[in-house]
Image (cartoon, rainbow, N blue to C red; front, side, top):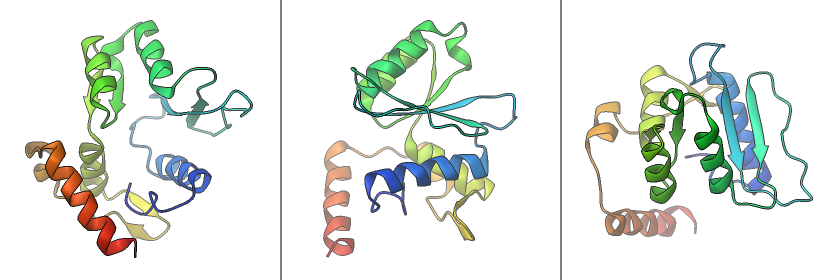
Amino acid sequence: MPGLNSLKLEDGRRGLVRFVEANRPQGSYRNSLTIVFDGKEDILGGEASGEVRVLFSKGETADDLIKRMVESAALPADMVLVTDDRDLGYYCKAQGAQLWSVAQFLALARKTGMVLKTGVRFKGPRPDAAESKQISDRTANQINTELSRLWLK
């Protein structure tokens, strides 16, 4: 996410959790939200949060943990997975889960005025642009390379 990807790993993770807690993209308080991070077995996961469940994979990848969660869900169709990982996304969608790209999620953030950091509104792509346009992996890599060249001097 813009504003978080330049931070140290733990700071970025905390920032994502705070963003989700502050904006409740899951809508109703009755809808649960889980963030899954890759973790080592010596990391104690599951940071307590009022509305957000945080899990760290232990002895497996975060992708494998997410797959197991979707497989074991009573109603996978009620689950929404936010990821740009194609393999994970296709697998979970085949199990019945809904799939959102990160761009779609951020477009929702912009559309609903979610706050990325205290006092700063997210300024991402127009919602209709993110939902209707796809770019190739090659073009995405070229864009990322150019942005890295400009921003990470």
